[in-house]
Image (cartoon, rainbow over all chains, first blue to last red; front, side, top):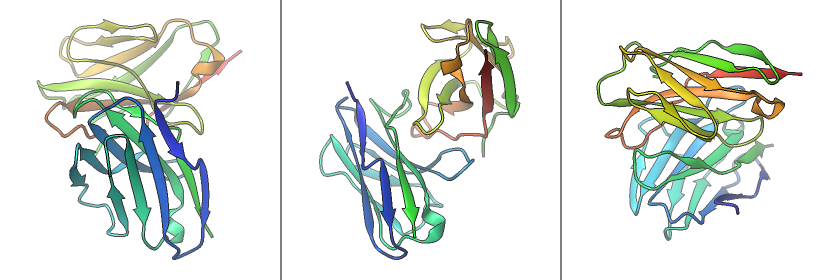
Length: 112
Length: 111
């Protein structure tokens, strides 16, 4: 009964090589979020989509972009990963903004 | 910036109640108190939320003080599977759904 699915669970990429992480949901929620969680730190919001409306956090680096082709899927693109981008990337959904969020298991990104 | 203060760590004996405190002295009238937890290497999990009344669900109880400046999450019978980092988050419905995580409380349930 997976509700928020993230693939892959573990991703290794090379320094500077573009990488895409994916998230899908079976909840038909309107809002999808991407968080970054570095080792021993709390999750930090990168951006979110409310339907097709993209909302970027002010301090999210330009290196990070997102796409939401339909309600069910959302992608996180890292154009030129640096060593500092190694982290767990968490996708979450909520029915509407302000409601409780449901998180996926995360994708752990390693940059070599 | 996080608007909450939590102890960094707590221990609890298995089968006993775990009481996790949270201070949110600057909470405003339209802001809710949310609790999430994150078990190691998993995504955060929603537990409960409340505005001013005490709330209970199948996972936990939330006690909010009358002045709303602090709250306590209660796990009535903690199990080893409740070992996790617990985040107390203050959020208003008009804040775009953003969750601002503080450092949370690392709860260790011991046999």
